[in-house]
Length: 290
Ligand code: G3H
Ligand code: ZN
Image (tube, rainbow, N blue to C red):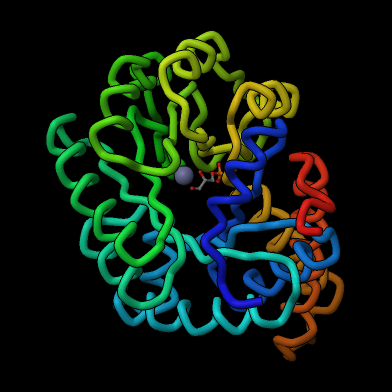
């Protein structure tokens, strides 16, 4: 199937109380693991590529990264019958424009750190552009921290204000809203609880589907409850990277003389495919592509 605008599936997920998984990839094998899992589970899925992954894929040149991954994403989607979208995750303004132009079917503008009004005006401009060519648009109100191994102050996290969320969605016209409920990017253990009361308050004011970032560090119980309350797109990165790299580490540890990249990269691909399949089942999207 060609790359899809996955929004109809996200809307259906919202209505039926499940979520579409958005899975991060940094390498060809990680992209393949996602489509293989989507096909095996007959589930809609999102391949998502972060700002930093673009830099990696483009050997330091983000635009080159967008071009590479747009081509790879098209081929990956064509290789299966389940619906798959290619999403720019945490994009800058210029990356969003390039991604829309070069064939991504979904984009996120990350206005993290911008004054609220500026976040609104850039997001609105980008959203109009995305919609003019049938691309799905996500943006964020509040902050899901990206500590990247550094210390951060948990009590200073800027959680999503329900009134701001309402004003933001009405003014910008976005399709999905990323909300900050206490999750943090890049955690290696499921140690965080979500502010579900806040989610309820947001849900009362915002009708569009909501997005959970930083799911790797959130307890599965809270993810499950959050999905039933309207988190209809769930982003997963670190959990996948742990499985991918862990499998490669095992293979290399077992055979110190191994040099053939196919042997260890395929182990990483299989391990990531299994965890994507597990998440798809957990999010309730298995079988929904039919
Ligand atoms: O945008 C990507 C996600 O929010 C993933 O976060 O690495 O904590 O799973 P994670
Ligand atoms: Zn994120």
